[in-house]
Length: 295
Image 1 (cartoon, rainbow, N blue to C red):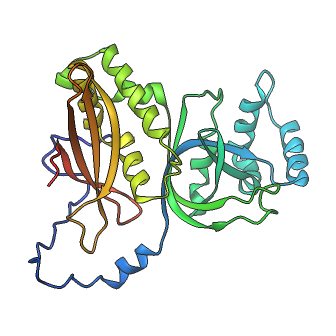
Image 2 (tube, rainbow, N blue to C red; image 1 turned 45 degrees about the vertical axis):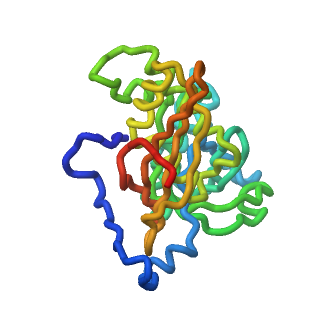
């Protein structure tokens, strides 16, 4: 998964411009397609994907498939991945219920928008699961599952369009160090801590504009880690993360993500922010990291 290059001349996605209407003018009309988006709950969640048996019959069918497979010497997790990734048993992968856990809590049931995306789920199964495994799920919330869908789990269903699966430590290693430095362990420690803190924010299920923006920045925008490293290097601590609706919002939904850093000696707080457009399923950057001043 590629991070945004802050220095690139051409952004990965087009940046919308604000209408710039005079204060006395009426609000611009909302286009029908944007009005429809307003009633849709998009999800940009960070967690871990697990495969569960929805019924005893599927579990018994899996046991028969397992007996036909070459899984000698494999752990249970490795055998599960081996069978479900085998195209001969793809029908079993379709029957499984796929659960996204966030901070260890069962949060969503996942279904692909397109049947060809089933491999994104099987690829999320690791041969050796670890606590640092990370799955980023991007999709649309579709309602609540019936008890029959997954052994009584009545969870919101997310129809996903994209899943990114990676190891947190590998992700942190891939973040460019400031000033082109390599092997900077202090920077890696900062990035790891900030990534974990964003994921641990209260009730971050990735379904609100605020949490979608934060999760997007955590996995796609390295400048948030660079700024944190600079603050820690000067003796400051991360004292707050706030997300508020931007004044640039018109027919689109744009939020300001504000990071507050307080000097440990003087207790003076400095704030930096970036803007993210969260109108549609895939958020994108509007404004790069800059100092924030209350107006």
